[in-house]
Length: 196
Image (cartoon, rainbow, N blue to C red; front, side, top):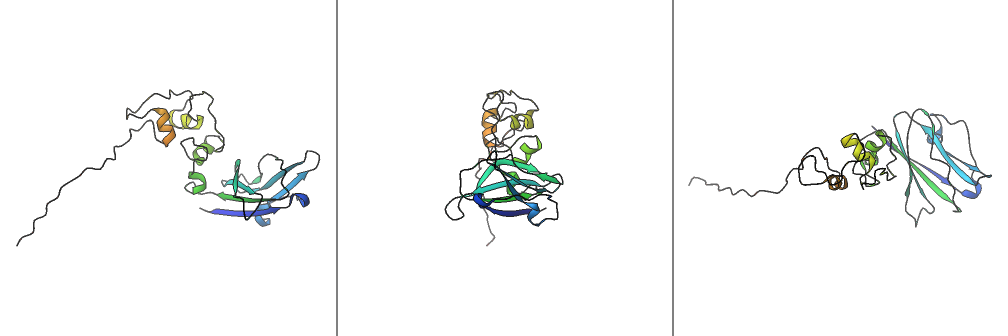
């Protein structure tokens, strides 16, 4: 299992595109193309089969933090990348992080507060940066489908009778079908007697 990091610096004023990306290209063929008609940029690379790709960007390598784009792609031995985007920045820097390790921090993080990992959300067809609540019950659709297989779960329900509502379980990343274990520590007095 591997986690990789690729970086690409882009000067918006001088950006130009390349074509014909392949798996053997340097930096996985990471390129950016400017559409001068729409004034949009397209970022793309060769996606290795079964790797998950995250894009980060910043306008300044010194004073600005790296920020995730609201996009994650799964490689399928083909070119992939986020939808075209526009920017007013005079320069941008991009970083591409990718992994095939489902236990990596990239995939175990819950970026949108859904109560389940990015990998689980991706596996269910959700973008782990988007909040999706089609039933307006304050519970992310991915959490409902993962734990119940349906949408519209009663947020006040307590299917496992552990005293936590479905809403509370979703907010804490709990399992609504498995009672929470009481982790209150018990005190045990142990007297040890040694022979004289």
